[in-house]
Image 1 (spheres, rainbow, N blue to C red):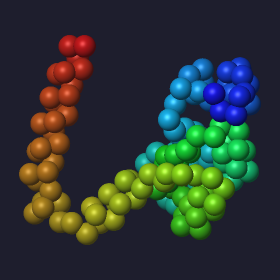
Image 2: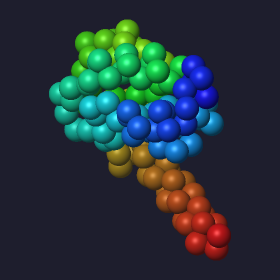
Image 3: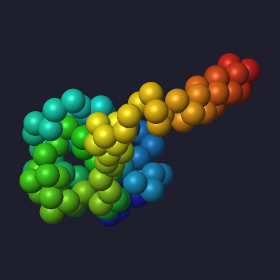
Length: 124
């Protein structure tokens, strides 16, 4: 448990859920969400700092594609350890690549993998 706090204390202030004490990292809602189309999300930097001090776990920023560079840097300064940037990088990539020329085989490979995963999970 982080800093000797009780399990109830970890759950109550921030709504982190009942099993947070067993986590290796925490990805929590601090003002952004996945797959944002614009980069104007406002992060709660005070909450990030409080979570960093309270949880003593690496904090993961999901949904950073909706956060501008200045706020990303401020989030790291406030305590974020990992910043997920996949959606942002995918937007850059697909903005340059010619989908018909370059992405056909990749799209087919992903479609086959999705179908395989769905078959696997449907039988679980």
